[in-house]
Image (cartoon, rainbow, N blue to C red; front, side, top):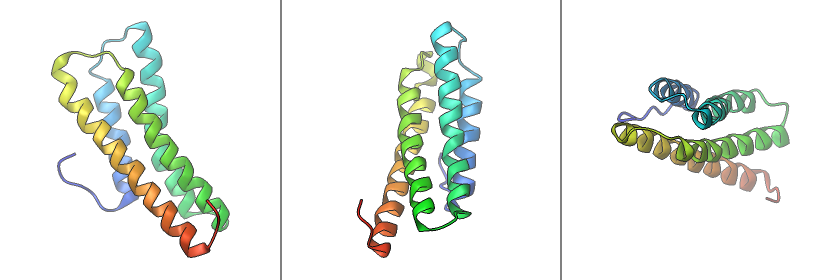
Length: 122
């Protein structure tokens, strides 16, 4: 993603959309089919859980949803690394992996700041 979106709901939505556009270009081998299913689920789960965090029932619920966002971002990078693809798609995958890593760090920072603000143990 060249231009970063700072509305995190929009950014996570665009990320999930970009993952979906990427996987449409892949060969549908048996391993890729399974990895594609996983990466589509985990990439979409980041934004879905962030929306849920913003509508949380309380501080602990918020923290749990943010932890899930962070976990799903890390998982998305993992599934992206397993996908078999043509070399021509390497830059696109690297960009998606970088965005997953940035999202993981953003959610990690939100978690750390929120925990400190609430004086909760990690």
